[in-house]
Length: 280
Ligand SMILES: Nc1nc2c(ncn2[C@@H]2O[C@H](COP(=O)(O)OP(=O)(O)O)[C@@H](O)[C@H]2O)c(=O)[nH]1
Ligand SMILES: [Mg+2]
View 1 (cartoon, rainbow, N blue to C red):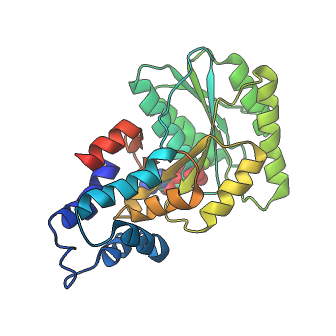
View 2 (cartoon, rainbow, N blue to C red; view 1 turned 90 degrees about the vertical axis):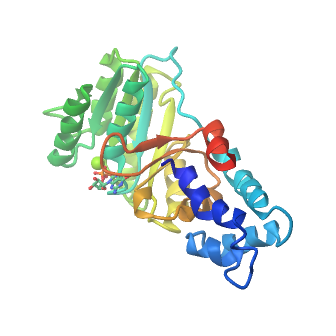
View 3 (tube, helix red, strand yellow; view 1 turned 60 degrees about the vertical axis):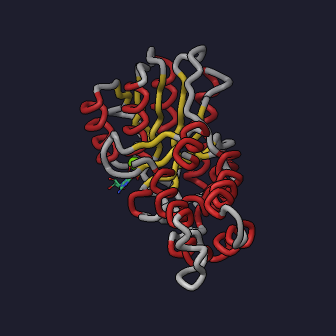
């Protein structure tokens, strides 16, 4: 079931069945808190929705107001060859897995895809991406000799003949200036080949990160402007409200969510899909 459909069935169906209107049972605010919206957002939405009229419709409208302005569709500009996507984020946030998921998703849409192993710190990271590339059957760019991620990225962009090139990077803490300047260098060298690259710059955020996500968006955005985020590991947040709260808190475009460890566990977002899932 899609992410927003699940959200709808945890919330709106209950409200629609009037279980919530019978305040004796449970209030809307309590329901939202149970669905992981966090106290502040739960209380605000509950207040906005009120207690009369068509509460289910009001609730959907409030959710739309929060989410719709920030939903983006992944769209590839075919005039850019390769169309370069860079994924960044802190350690373990799900970057490498998301590279594989995106590659799989785009291949299924008919694009030819290459991936670049620019996490050169750990041999295991290159191996991890090589395994994925073999399974998905896409090109992989890696270096046996260079430990410089910028030079691997440069060669990949220069030689890739594919429609899309997805660049994996090493996890880094935003408070490590050396690693952050290394990431800056990666952006600088690929811009030498194409001043408009990367064409999409995504931050991968672990859904269970909480408040620190705000800092991550701010700090990674300073290195290179972010196109938006993908939130990984939403399968670990059973009720979905936490994601709405992240979207609301960060006020940054979201392109989709990762919901598992397999390549097919990626859900891309679009406004049409959101409205269909939530409003139907
Ligand atoms: N349950 C779940 N696990 C995930 C998801 N995305 C990544 N992981 C797991 O999280 C761990 C770190 O992922 P990885 O892609 O290596 O993170 P990286 O360090 O940012 O490259 C691995 O064990 C992945 O299998 C997801 O959407 N759901
Ligand atoms: Mg990785």
